[in-house]
Image (cartoon, rainbow, N blue to C red):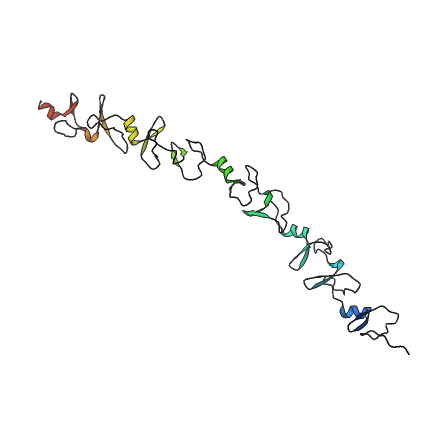
Length: 280
């Protein structure tokens, strides 16, 4: 009498049948699959012992069931992404969740180097200066009406230029005759003293400090011999070819102010009417 050789589960004889040996004994194929096989997360059928089984995050799949949930492409040998428990091939993931490059219109692939600004996205190599067309990368840039410029290109194209040296003004500066100047370029034509923040005047469009203008161009007071510059609301009196500061225009004898009064010239002097009538 021959020794029994039965399935550990259903106890049917395994003589002449295909079986699978395990640590707990031999199993016929149906019993083995029912006992040990995993259930496919996609089709909910058992994954038989002779099927290729794929495993991902505690889930098991038949090879044919391991597919992109959108285009149904097999993911068995393809890179993929899991989004909200759904498996997606890279193409479908990029189409659904990745940004489009604002320059070239292509997808900005996950993990690739990119730049984002103002709600837009660029490949790093597509984010170029609108002037020199060089990649901006991590450099400072200036946006202008949908364009983006590196700082040198923006200054060259848009920044105001100094009326004297013609170089761009990047910060600060002063305005003279409705034109921009570097503070260090606005200097007195005579002594080269900086004029920014100082009182000054001009001659033939050239700026002069008060001292130089008075020395070079202003008439001299016939009384004190100092220049009459007329700045700061200063007033003066002229008679024939002579000029006086308001506070210098007084009677040569009694020192009474003659501003707005009648006076009598007496050689190089001027006298009030009273002193003139009194005689020498």
